[in-house]
Image (tube, rainbow over all chains, first blue to last red; front, side, top):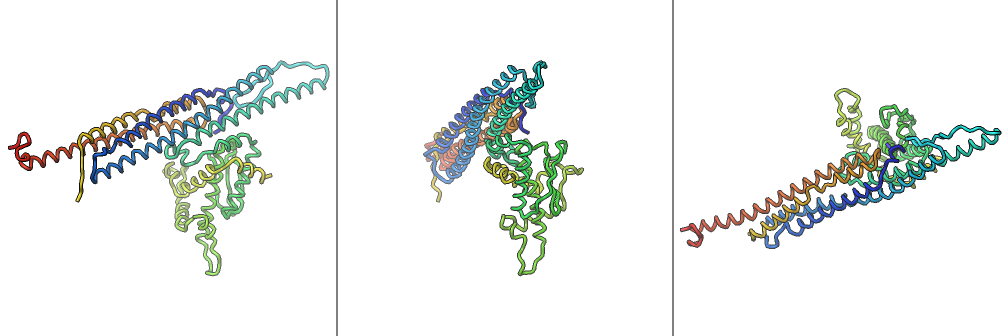
Length: 350
Length: 104
């Protein structure tokens, strides 16, 4: 979930820079260790078959440390980039808090702006209305500044998340991460605009998947799930509106539409045609889906592991073929999404 | 036919170098630095990711150091084996015609 103003105002840039320095220092030590292994692990005087085996092991050591160092450098750069963004945030928070105090406003932890000035009396109704307008505009300007801060916070957070190398954090490996520009753009949009982007995205993904446009149901934030797909003609895609401010919801959308495609592929694989008729499964085959895959999805749907059922573990749910495949689709979508694509979807939706 | 050459002192030196490289790497997984970074941005999604990454990096560096230690041991053992085999063969030739101490 995106972070709120109450927490962002306590963010500090300096520790990010210190952490970047620390990671860089560790990388330097590890690089020396790797170079020492590379240069000295095989004595020049050593010949024979065993030397080749040793070279294989040395190369594996060097390779694995090189990969580790690449990850460290990636994270180190992200920490420095985030430091710059958070330096901006610290300055902007000080500015906006100073302006709020001077103007007798209070900014709540949720970013809302409240007028806390003493009530005044006015000689005329016109004067009262004029004053109210000025105060409203001042409050709106402060609220806009808070939004600008939250946009930078989303970018800083995504900068770090996006730098996490693969193979270390399951959440990143399985669900993907939003590009910092995508996270920042998403933070700028209103909930109405986010819905419009998502609904356009669903329309386009459905069309690409050979699906009829599903019915979209926005569930209340108390709903216990991020999203779900119910098969039908058309299918029904449920999404949690409480997650609208989190770009991870875009993974969920692509994930759920993929479930629709899985059902469609199963139907088309089971479809019978005369030899002169076209095979509806061709469109899935063209997109890299095999008949074996469709058959395994069919078996899986018939024996779906619902984590709400007694005796079904989260692991059972998580690792079943249809969920694994849908997560791949969601991750690929989120990882590949650009700010320009969000703007295009928004434009198409208008 | 296999031709091989082992200089035991070179093997020992290489073994020490790799062992030192592995030991030098230990403790540089960076989890403490990533934890520092996380403490600077409370509430951010990346805090948990940095924590998981730190744990994984620490484990990875430790595993690398263990592999380096294992490699160093293999290297030292190969040098010792070669020296031992050479001495054993020497004994088998009746102390190299009485030249090796204790033969004869």
